Length: 264
Image (tube, rainbow, N blue to C red; front, side, top):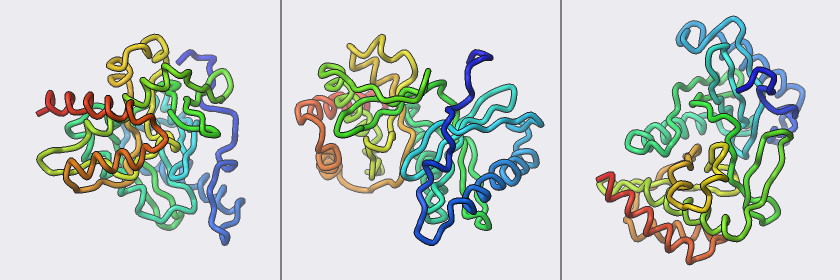
């Protein structure tokens, strides 16, 4: 990152908070501030000094229905922080952290979390992952498939028809490639609309090649895992990716199988 470039985006995190009816916005803002800036910072200082510094900076960069996302800059390196939405049941973030740990053991395509911390007194949980500079989250906006681009201003860019076909094939292949044929465990509750899949900046240069897009794409969410037969897992993919062109799903399944075979 260049020195003059912003660490995060200018919006305030609390704009994107999802709250239950009994939660008060100001109270939740104060809770988050104390949790991140004091409680979590002290945890890093005492337990993970390699991630801590006196000049640590934390800035909001993204959000989803499950988590609010920040970037942490300790002056030496940057990391991504994913904090559970204020209305999220305590323990859900830890569950996703554990799921990502399981999936990332044999899959470099899954972002492997580095550490987890939670404090029930604040009803807040957080986990930290490697940081991908200006990563693009794939998602839908008004039924249009595209990516959210953080610079120069946070905005949405729709894929054209050809690029959309490649993205749909690559996402399908990525999901299939995560299936473990020995344990019959795969990814469950995946959502394209929630930014579960990211592409690194510059992917546009190779988007005409589905293999390059597949290799560039990372999985950053794992709300739950499922244990089922491969046939049922394929059925689940067709069900969850109902907005995709069925031909792109077919090609993605074939590509995903080729990746499984290479891994085994």
